[in-house]
Amino acid sequence: MSRKYRSIDLFAGIGGIRLGFERAFGDDISTEFVSEWDEYAQKTYKANFSTPADGDGTAKVYGDITLEETKDAIPEFDICLAGFPCQAFSMAGRHMGFNDDYKGICRGTLFKDVAEICEKHKPAVIFCENVKGLTIHDKGKTFEVITKTFKQIGYEVFPQILNSKDFGVPQNRERIYIVCFREDLNIKRFDFPEPTDSTKCIDDIVEENPVSVKYYLSDVYLDTLKKHRARHEAAGHGFGYEVKDRKGISSAIVCGGMGRERNLIVDDRLTDFTPVTHIKGEVNREGIRKMTPREWARLQGFPDDYKLVLADTHLYKQFGNSVTVNVIEAIAKEIKRVLDCNEKGIPAYDKPKRGKLI
Image: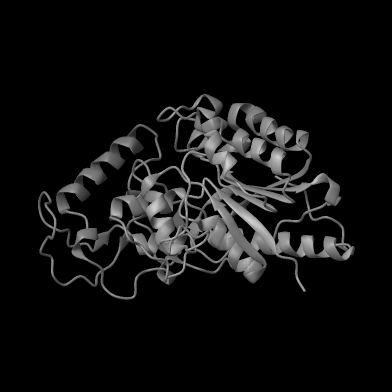
């Protein structure tokens, strides 16, 4: 009989990391505690998960994890899932790192709350995900502090950068993944998964039926974008709108700036060009539109039965901030295999290590 693992979901967002682990572990994992401070992310999370039960048929989601009363509510657990906020280290952000402050919470230091919680509870596994920029912020010093912190509280630390495009979704999204095993487990090696599927293209995630005219750009706005890109190109900058080849892959979806405009597509199925929202000019006749929230969900590996209950503005932000479920699942499967081997007292690997970590 397989061992049952108890997990906690910190900085849970909309549950992408949890979803990946549930796919990998199946009935052998249960979520015992959830924390997410954003009220809109909480609503999406509660619409899609029912445990740990809150008495109303939805999951109980705690708020600010930096508060002692929130930390005191954490039960014993075996696996810590922690997608601590990435904006402080993002390539698209200001690279403020540990100096980043937002709404009174220093986002760049929130990983220390993860360390504090794990030092107290000593789970078998800590799993973290963040932007690739974390590894180079402050000439690598930030990442060094993070890895040293986990080592100081008694964990073997294994980091690796993986790209979502190699795991069954057509999105070029590099992220750093950190897997930590408690030292007394004596797990000295962890190999991250090899690519599973690099064949998907944007056509594979486009909605099957024609989408609302509201996703199509106005001719006035499209002209503005073209002029905006021309100015950037003249100045030697790379930013601006981009219409993607549907036989290719998308750029990383992000929630800020021109995230939606960098992943436009051509969809000529629209027949009624009557606007349903207030726009300047007319709906463009080139078929250029934004991807829909459902298409962004698919780019992140979320299933089609994942409920989208909020306005588009919130959904774009949530999926842009979320994780690629397919990548999480692949890593989680390897974590489970290594844990199972460790439980049985047999080696997890019988071949030399592949390459080097990050």
